[in-house]
Image (cartoon, rainbow, N blue to C red):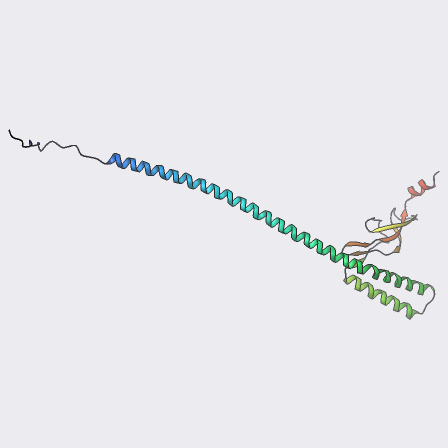
Length: 201
């Protein structure tokens, strides 16, 4: 018995082993992993974007708080400075008032012109010093009464003046850096309707 392998005809091809199926599975796995990586990176990017937005909000909030603190500190310092200047200025204003009264009295009683001129010069110099501190007189006579700046001590018949027009300034008022330091004490005109109402029984 012949055990030799029979000859295969030359024109018959043996089935070839193609690795396409294995490469396809590997490629699909790579695509799946890439998609998962992409999804993970997108989630991470969203988380980072949200965190960045939170940090930006915190930064803006801190900046706002710092600005508010700066403004409060500035206002507090300005108020303290204003209070100190007011405390110093009020007694000086009383001296200025006395000098002005002395000048008027000197003129009324016929005092020497040199004496009156000297008093007025000192009074003017004192007002200049106050002005450098920010103390400025309030305009009153001829203006309408404003309770924010004027204090009415009396009313008088209008005699052609506007109702609530300031007729006379009894004591001059002053502002300190735009804020009321002392109100002007004034006499205010009252209108014809008010006169009639007061005269009627």
